[in-house]
Image (cartoon, rainbow, N blue to C red; front, side, top):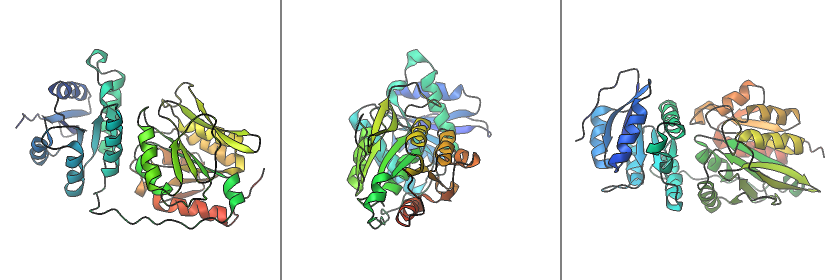
Amino acid sequence: MLAAHAVAANKIKVLIIDDSALIRSLLTEIVNRQPDMGVVGAAPDPLVAREMIRELNPDVLTLDVEMPRMDGLEFLEKLMRLRPMPVVMVSTLTQRGAESTMRALELGAVDYVTKPKIDISRGVGEAGQELVDKIRLAARARVRALARAPAAVTTLAALGNRRASTEKLIIIGASTGGTEAIKDVLVQLPPDSPGILITQHMPAGFTRSFAQRLDSLCRISVKEAEHGERILPGHAFIAPGDKHLLVRRSGANYVTELSDGPPVNRHRPSVEVLFKSAAQHLGPNALGVMLTGMGKDGATAMLEMRQAGAFNVAQDEATCVVFGMPKEAIAVGAVEEILPVQKIAARLLEKLSTGEHRVRV
């Protein structure tokens, strides 16, 4: 058993799980430099970690994906069934790492950091700040037990209104917890749904795996966005991890636009950038959705969408992992309805099929 360390009662207690002694040491140094958190222990594998969790009762775990004796995902699945708690994954920037991270989020991990960013030569700069920010976030996040079997997905009836679904677009923004919230919305949509644009805060290398996972689960087609694609009904486009996604009009069609512009609200892709383009180019043809996430990215632009005639909804606090971005959008008056994530798809389709949301071209 590795040595445990005392941490003041008012601090976030962190347990680090990683098979690399170097990474354990570095993460411990980064966390212990913070005034509001401390490392209570560091385990080389999940089997040691299991005993330390019982003894030390940490508030947050950092968990490596690939480890000896028990895979990180296997451990996470057991943990979220038996003792749900906030987990931040430490992932590699590889295709396999991205796929494992998507699975970890599905199993209930709150968030993740990418291991290559954890570099001794960079100290606790940007990489360290990202880690401690996500630990703070995880300590406050809403964590749920993993169900023993996946719940049945209710898919909604086809719109039967090709004109409405062609002229309208659904615009979605999300951050922490958003990968599962986006899935909860998209899996319910019929094949003739309006085209969909999505900005989820996620680094380069991960959005393609995310899109592929969604495409395998949904009746609509889901892909990582490319520049200049025509946005068709039944298709969803996810902003690549290092580019802003915008919508533009090209004649009678809507098309995607990718931008290398500077980060907005510290993010690229930024929800603010996508929503602002929707306000400018879609007007009342947009249906805006703000899902779970930390911060206020997109709130101001979502208000611009509403002022331009869009119908906007936000995920409610009870179903958010972090009620940050929806709360900010609600606070500025950008949102018309607040709904549990499981009811958002049905409400959007109801709005379309009943003609409540009038088309003004």
